[in-house]
Length: 112
Ligand SMILES: [Zn+2]
Image (cartoon, rainbow, N blue to C red):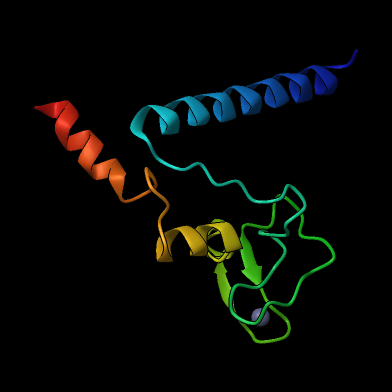
């Protein structure tokens, strides 16, 4: 097994551990963990016009939209797209019991 296979396996395991920790912590604080579909093109989608690129190389750190002219940091563009993920929008508009808004209350009572 080459080093790149080992590196990929370690990265995959680290990602799984991060998800496990997020599930544990959100349960602990009574929050909601919302995950986007793994194929949602958060990086390749323009957060302004919605155009989706075929590919964006990992080394390309600035998102340039040929359709509307948006120029934005790659991660910021992806974050804006993820903020529009339907599960996030629904939670912010109508939080479920024990959802996002109860997090502050749980943190307050835990610190007293
Ligand atoms: Zn665009």
